[in-house]
Length: 94
Image 1 (spheres, rainbow, N blue to C red):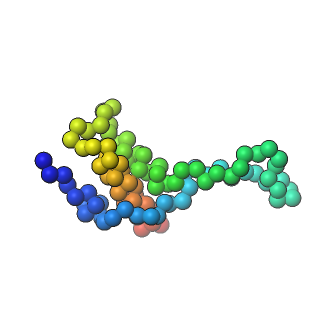
Image 2 (tube, one colour):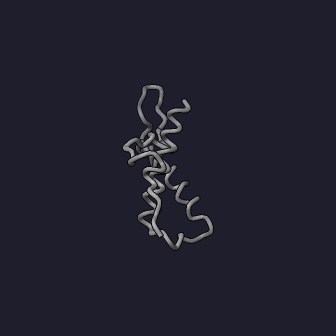
Image 3 (tube, one colour):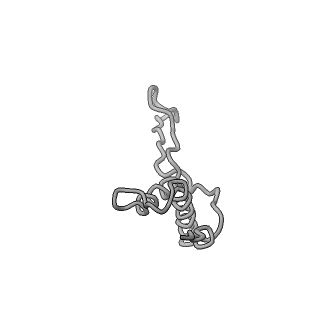
């Protein structure tokens, strides 16, 4: 069975746009503008693109198992293509 051309269906090649941080950790600052001693360093967290891809992959694999006809690499690529489409739609909606 021939696989669909997902890049064409979903609008082209994968993007380098990450969408920024999905869950950034930004430390508080005191009145002098300094980070309190002992506070964990700032962390950008996962990108919004990674978060969208994880959600897309979960939706593709609903039912608790990988689809038999598609390998894991192909599912991963499709998840990121869908994430790229979500980021594009998000930019156009704003």
